[in-house]
Length: 250
Image (cartoon, rainbow, N blue to C red):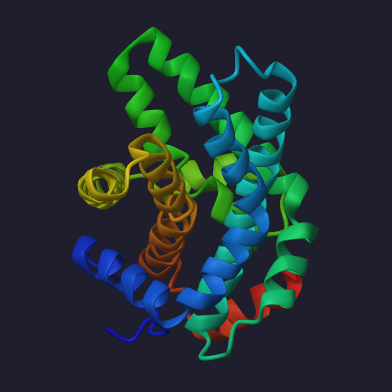
């Protein structure tokens, strides 16, 4: 599939398109992720090897704050990379980071609000929690790419996913499943290497940290493509409209 063709996509095509994008722009996405999440990921490894949050409460709090900031920047920057690729342009590191910084507050607000609402719905009953999570599955993408507020991004996501929440659930389950397969594979490799070189805990912690770096980019790629799929289906979205939208959002 050509990732820059805007047309309705099946679940398989969304996942395939996300993997194609990641493969084509792996160095760029990895660079963005390392810059934004490298320090907190290294702190995670250190905490795992030194007794955890109970032994280092101050460092653990700083780690959580840096992880929160980094995840928002990775989301915004990856959305920009996917969108530029759709237009047949060459995504650039500096442009992606500037875009993410400019939309930081809106993406952060959308993530926090959708997270709180999902938790509240889940506490009430599991099924409503899943429905809410699926309804807000493209809230971050709407926050990054459209000019509205965080609250408007939530409403926008809910409206776009009407009739397609099952697809959001399927994409989320399959994406997380693929990540878990890689994670378990890394654990097996770590166990084998640890048997030869010793220091198994350290090897496993480093491998787990490396895999965790890919979680946000993978999910963001998948749900950015899903966002465009929904807009194509419901609004006749095309490349010209995307180009104008990116100019406004940038």
